[in-house]
Length: 81
Image (cartoon, rainbow, N blue to C red):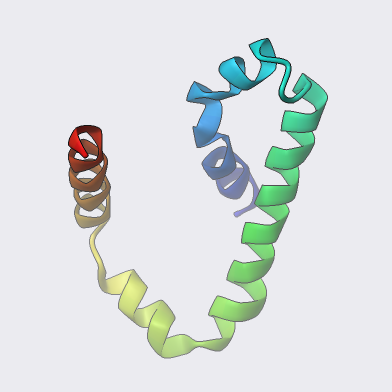
């Protein structure tokens, strides 16, 4: 779970170089921020979602291709607006 959470937090890699080149954040600050985001996501999953079984069951019933497809649609629509 920890490695998947960390990889999920690193999906912002497409704009990390711009933040570094613009000297908005240093590489160390971005790494620490991604690590902290991973830890927060992990804590939410473990401590809060684990306590709400109906919500977890509902989320488990959604097929992965549906989630990926929905993200693709939302991001594609976001390009035009």
